[in-house]
Image (tube, rainbow over the protein chains, first blue to last red):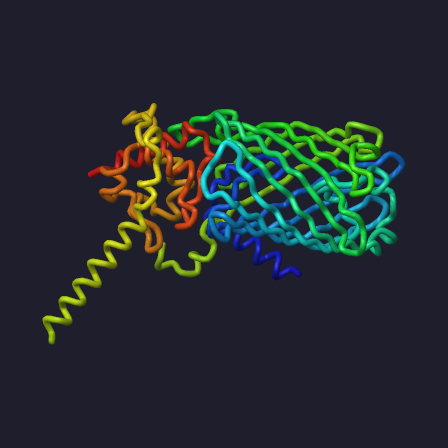
Length: 285
Length: 127
């Protein structure tokens, strides 16, 4: 394991980073694709505590690659740590996003397809069906036996207007072991604190920050569609892009009903390696 | 025989150049008239050139080269097409929409102001 981690760190620190101008969203996807040839490494975490349960940290390590200008593919490794319990690897996901319309419109659709093989997941990358705070009370020893092989589809809609990005996601998820389709939603909006770039190098100027708000929740399943017994969260978002290209994101999020966790604190780091494969062909630079 | 071979070679070179030129600059024909005529609010402003240079280095230089001279795979932005044929409005349209079939992504995620600053910088490279 150690050589693999060393190799990843080496690649990250030796590679020249590109400034990601990442949206500060944790759950919502925007219609913006990864630039072709770029690899983005992201590490996202969600910290929460269900009433009467143990505090937990759910994490994703993500590798997002721009295959073409209209196709982005991403591989996730998931894990979680629960206080007074254990630290476990919870599975993997592979997603692909396709942009069917090749020009920018006032609203831009993206098709998202994901397959996942997870158990005891606490990263809360989305909320669907009747997901709620009680799901976090089981011990890892029990919940890790509950394997979920799932197919997830999303319709991502996004718009950019006068510096604002507005994104909406409609989510449908199916556990492939004879469970009904479950539904969810997410929406978010954000804006850089300053729209024009500064003529001089700066570390904390407004263009390096993006702020916004995000809301997401479940919409029941095929047999009980709606907001009854579903959890919903809302919270402000902020991120900052450091001069070396790393983006740091943070969001405190609040449960909107008794079915939700009271609070989730999310934080993440992302780093973009530009033109990954051309690094192996220095002559083309 | 040799003369015939040279003629064929010249014809192939001409056709290849023509096809490449048409394929590379085809996007210009797609720009709506309204976008073609859009004015750059930062036109030739020295501050915008400096800011545009910063954005260019961060976002564009890994494909188009440190000084927009192009790379083996991506075109130079000092070409006559970019510097003389395309208006600033055309370039803005290209940055917003991209040319995704050819590998140029949409840069609509950048605020309009930064797109215009990049265009101001690119146009300042005219020799």
